[in-house]
Amino acid sequence: MNNILEISHLNKRYEEFLLQNVSFSVPQGYIMGFIGPNGAGKTTTIKSILGMVYPDSGTVKILGSEISSENTEIKDDIGVVMDLPFYVDEWKIKDVEAAVSPFYSRWNSKVFADFVRKFGLIQNKKVKELSRGMKVKLMLAIALSHEAKLLILDEPTSGLDPVARDELMDILRDYMLDETKGILFSTHITSDLEKIADYITFIINGKIVFTGQKDKLLESYFLVKGGISDLNSLQKKLIIGYREHSAGFEGMIKAENIGMLPENIIFEKISLDEIIIYMNKEGTSHE
Image 1: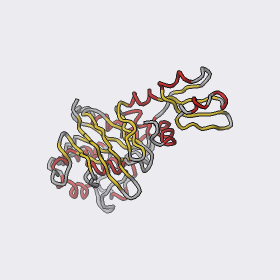
Image 2: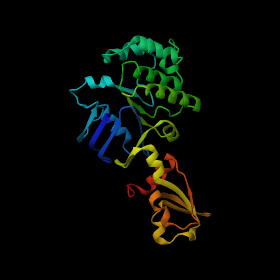
Image 3: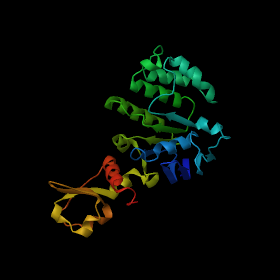
Image 4: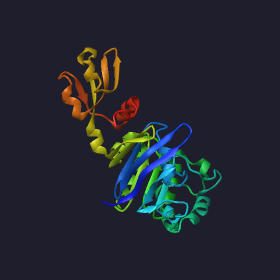
């Protein structure tokens, strides 16, 4: 299996934050969800991929070629959709195209016009007059009009209503019909990733705590609930993010440890959101 994106041993030190030995890869033909709480290191990692931040050590490769200040051609292969566009508010659609197209050697005006029409973008509207959803579609139209092999999405669904988010998921599914492509999708709306992602990379406090198949992550943990007196002190240590309340306790447990708890304990399937919450409570102690 070939990787479209490879990140190896990435380190970046700031005064109050350290990105530590971050390594993961995105296989061609698949979508990688990138998750973690605020301040975990997702943005620093993405900026390192885009060459907006230079790591202290480590490498980033796109289709086997290393990202560097000298190797600018490889950026043709990257399409980027951020939470907000960087375009001038007064620009119309034609102005946006005129400004960005010279940066891409494979820019295709016909493809861009087709996406503008498909997405229902209004040519005469200024960027500042576009809705949140339309701004995302404009960024997608740009990203999809220069034969990008890798899409990097940084919180594109934030603030979108369910209908607009569903439309975006359909667009991404269409993009992934070409199995030579790949997507790195960073978002706090993990329900979107549960629908569309094949893999998950989970980062906390600058460290990767999981990278692998989404289904494997969801099968590795369970929600656990019971009465306060149901567990002894050793059993409580097995509960990740253990919390007591008036009705009993709750937390998360590794699937491999279920047999070590009493039979009357309640186990439930878990969501990506809940895994983030409980792992964040525990820091990185349950890598």
